[in-house]
Amino acid sequence: MKKLFTFILKLFPRPVLIRLSYVARPLLSLWLRGQKYTDPIDGKSFRKFLPYGYEKPRENVLSPSTLSLERHRLLWLFLVRETDFFREDYKVLHFAPEQAFYKRFRKLKNIDYTTTDLDSPLADVKADICELPFENESFDVIFCNHVLEHIPDDRKAMEELYRIMKPGGWGVFQVPQDLNRPTTFEDDSITDNKERAQIFGQYDHVRIYGSDYFDKLRSVGFRVEEVDLTAGMPEADIARFRLAEGEIIPKVVKPITD
Image 1 (cartoon, rainbow, N blue to C red):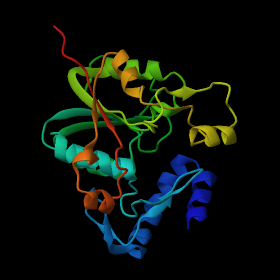
Image 2: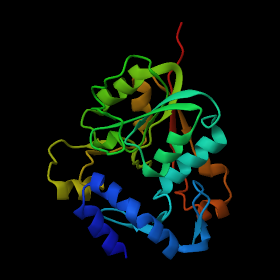
Image 3: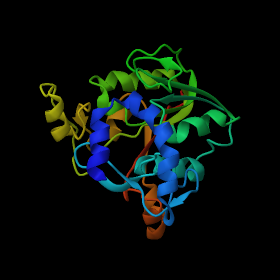
Image 4: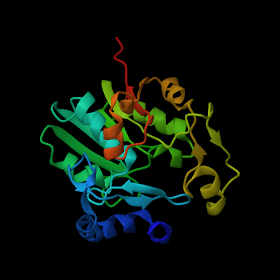
């Protein structure tokens, strides 16, 4: 099973995988139904989750019903438990929208929801994150998750995110991160896809973020809250939801200035 999913991930580009998933998801949900693990996004339970990963697939992490991974389920719980996202009126921008959230966010009556990406079939606006076609201070909430590790000039992207966020606005900018690494590692000379996959974890990643990622965000003006949601959760819930214990959610806020 693990080898099959790894082969499929490498064989098809992401836009094709998104379309294929609409067919596979109902069948996978039926096949794996059970009670051991629960996806908090839709409340459905399964006997196991699916493996996922390009170079070193992780067992039991991909939800059959929403196709969420650990980070998606953690973000959902954060939004439900720690924010007013589902209650307040917000103008929202979502980069590279994840299937686990896309239709659910689209149905929310309290938000004005826009998606953007260069390639995703779910994007309303095709745009380069380093040259965004939005006015200054346009959005109350911005989600930009697992995007910046793909961007060569990530500081420029961060500056654009800061520019288009309203003062007092907030966002979540998750990235693959090694918290045991004090500084981010990147090497522009590494261009071979296979070598990138071995070093950065995925063929289209250009860096491995360290614990200095939060300071990178602060350097462009954001206030950053490093949220460890699992620190206050029972071990049984962490196991049942298949979360990555200790994963940090970077919540950013654009300060209000006089």
